[in-house]
Image (cartoon, rainbow, N blue to C red; front, side, top):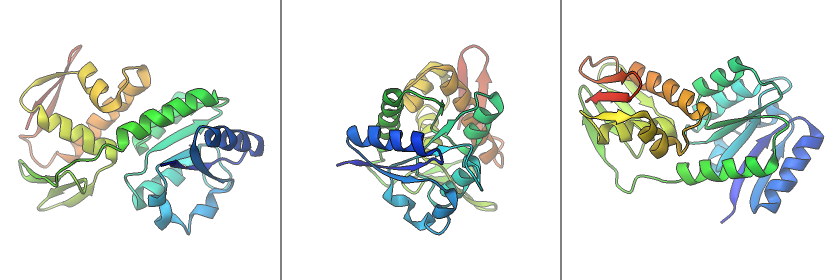
Length: 227
């Protein structure tokens, strides 16, 4: 079955080129040139397997659009494109929950490979509906919900869900950074490493209402999880 890609790109030449190349690679692509066209279609995001968002869009930048997308459909993987190779852009994308990030002009073949890697990773779903007691919290893997009796539920992203599941599987163990990157990110490059640090910080914040749930950083090695 074809993977369905939502492409939001305002450059007509670049957008047409990407759409054509991805369709040659057996993907179904819907190309939107104005982010405002998606504002009344947020309930249709589940139709897509992945979204490619240009950061520098008219009327609304790609980061803001991604936040709207993920608030409506947290499972949607997102790859950002930008003409600017600036650190602040990459960190912003990571904090929002980007699955990958490429600087324009990008190689369409490399982009296609990255999309396939993201799709391969994110389409792996839990086979059982399991609710896990986690200190004062409960963790619903299938619904991707982390719930605390006082503060309520947090809707996790696909990667947050997978990372937390991996940490729980290795509770009370010292876990090497490379092992987490290999399992959850399927990459150990600089971008993946920075992304992992952002996601670890995010999980610590989510779990802060139980002082016994600790993700300890072991410098130069990885993490020690006490769940």
